[in-house]
Image (tube, rainbow, N blue to C red):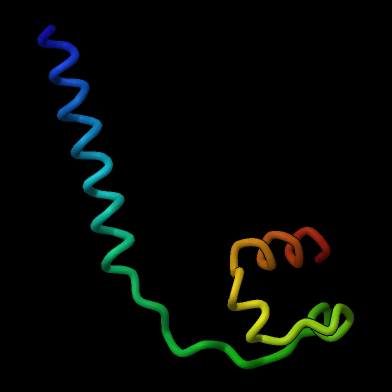
Length: 63
């Protein structure tokens, strides 16, 4: 029973650390530059910024 309580406390601490990290994250001014792949795919900085993770992954695999 004590192990379950320890596990719950540890999990709560880890999740709290992630939550604090996410809430404190600040993005600098958005990059409005185009690159070669963005031009090829007719991708604007605005569209790219709407889903950073997707486009970062897709364009990164292309490079």
